[in-house]
Length: 309
Ligand SMILES: Nc1nc2c(c(=O)[nH]1)N[C@H]1C(S)=C(S)[C@@H](COP(=O)(O)O)O[C@H]1N2
Ligand SMILES: [Mo]
Image 1 (tube, rainbow, N blue to C red):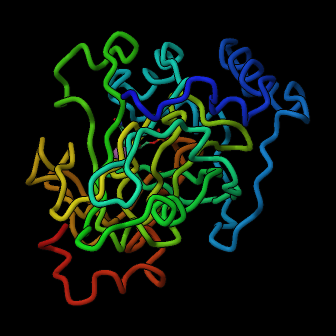
Image 2 (image 1 turned 180 degrees about the horizontal axis):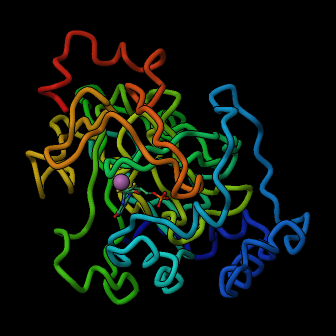
């Protein structure tokens, strides 16, 4: 990371500092979420317009969304990311954009975000482990960013890489996965308007445990495709490696479209547990493409989804 990186322009310059300080203070205290509505100053809210892509289902609480996470860079238990991710330095933050693009380079996050209107996207998130949440993300369409850097002919996939910094990401000190975490999308999936890069949630900058400062959200795929804390985006001609697919190819495919008809080898994918409903809440049926089929099923016309799982 070097040439085009400009430490004088940090992405936090585009974010009210009070938001960050307030968020840290709140997360530091036990039971913080309970007092959130009262404690959060009005100035901390991110300006994001509503979207026709949002669901009107009941959203999960900030406590759910920030307290029950998968982010193996900070440990494998659901509460580990909330406990350990405070160590992550997210400012300055640079993203390398390379491969089959017209304008490759190392971009400071502030540069990438400048002039890019933010939207609130309330999406269902379905983890491959058969639990789900409804999360009000804040972000922008990946398609807009790809248009800005210019996709060159021959590009067919987009590859993403998470930060590798074991001194801050304590889970990377163990060989749980082959670090860094990598993921990929087909170019048409990446260009779909439902595919966003998120910089916030619940009206605030993205908490570290949710993949600050920049993470992918692909709502019709299992959650592991939505890679966190991205430092590299590359346009490629061939299918890029994906961490869970590489780790257990028989259990996790490259496509990973939510599909109630194709079970995980070790459990059913027909239903899911909605986090926050309490242990007595009935499981809810899982929907094909996580309920986004009318918008995305066409991307897979003619494909055998049991084979390309
Ligand atoms: N780098 C990285 N990204 C990741 C993961 C991870 O362990 N490392 N876990 C994935 C999984 S399995 C899920 S379900 C979602 C969870 O996102 P959330 O914690 O913000 O709800 O993040 C995904 N992105
Ligand atoms: Mo997941």
